[in-house]
Image (tube, rainbow, N blue to C red; front, side, top):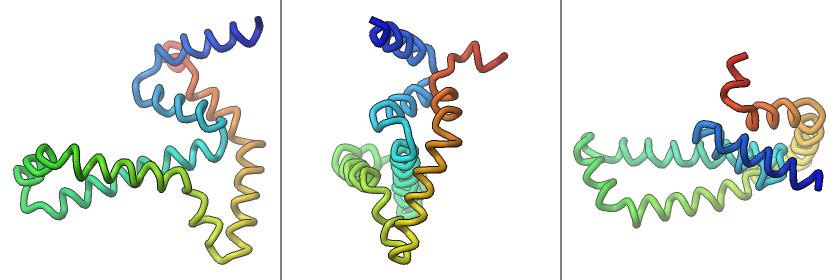
Amino acid sequence: MKARNSRNSISQKKSKLPWQRRWLAKIWLAYGGGLYAVGYATTFLYLEARSIINGISESSGLADFLSSEIFEYFFRFLGDSISNMVQAFIWFVPVLSYRSPLGIILLGFGFWLFDIYLRKPVGDWLLREKSESAS
C-alpha cells in the first residue's frame, strides 16, 4: 500500500512540472535514476542539437532550412532522431573505450561518486513541484 501511495504522489508531482523537467523526470525514472539516466539524456540532447545545427549549416539560408526541414522532417530528422536515440542508449561505450583501462576506471568512479553525492539532489530537483522551487 505504501508503494502505491508514493507512486501516485510521484505521478501527481510530475504532472505539475514544466514539460522539460517532466521529460527529464520520465527519463530519470525509466533509466534507474542514476548516472546512466543523466548520460542518456545529456547524450540525446547533445546529438539532437548537433543534428539541428548541422542541418542549419548545410542549408543556404533560413528559408531553405525551414522548407527542407518541413519537407524532410518525417524522413531525415526522424531517422536522425532514431539514430541519436540508439547512440544515447550506448553513451558509455566511448567512455569505456577511452584509453582502455582508464575509461573503465573513470566510468566506475563516475557511477560510484554520482550515486553517493548527486543521485538524491538531482532526483529531488527533478521531482520537486514548481511552487516548492520558488521557496
